[in-house]
Length: 294
Image 1: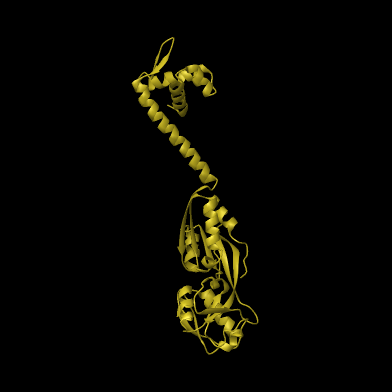
Image 2 (image 1 turned 90 degrees about the vertical axis):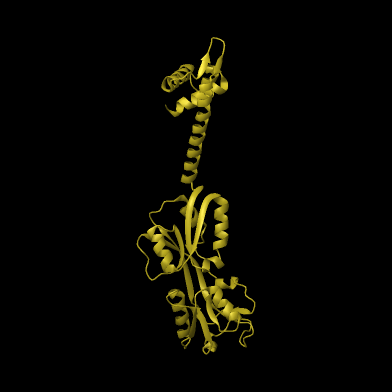
């Protein structure tokens, strides 16, 4: 039994006329009559009572009709879902990210992606650069937003999506918290709050290098989360060099100031598997900024 048999059954049952059923299916009448006859022979039942004046569906035909409609509906659903998946309209995508994009472009991108791909399921996971790159490479994640790594696996594609200048977060009550950019060397005696190196080596090394270029080695006090660092600054426990996008963390008692002299930038990249041809991955990458300087 084939799908054409089911379509003929439904058409004849709804029209109760072989000729009109054939017209509806864009067929001549003989193939429709033959399809019903083949079904009856295969099932071993009579689907329609035929006289010279009328056609009536039998009890067996009525049961077969109910199942035929269900199968055809399932086929239509299968076809639609497969086409939507191929077009990137449904399916799932997993995204790993460090915290920085969450303070800048990521919420806007995810909202637009969701609006344009309503049937897509989105899984989000926050982690470190090394964790995310490993998970993208292994296939556990589809796309990653990470800091510039020391090396990139050959199987991954990457693109710069954001450059953040390092700025100083300081207590508003600090004597040097005046408007305008500041000279970082004036803070050489301060406690600097920041990531532990093993947790964020890119940012850690950038902070140390920025201070060393200004003639001092910072007294570092480690923390693991950016919002924790900013909270400690608001409590007057020190200052912090942070990427400029962190200004989105509006914390009472914290002032942000740009640095005088040469700027240090923190690069954020999008990474994905080069061999991944998922329409959802392509759609997400198309929405990510090519470069955003803060």
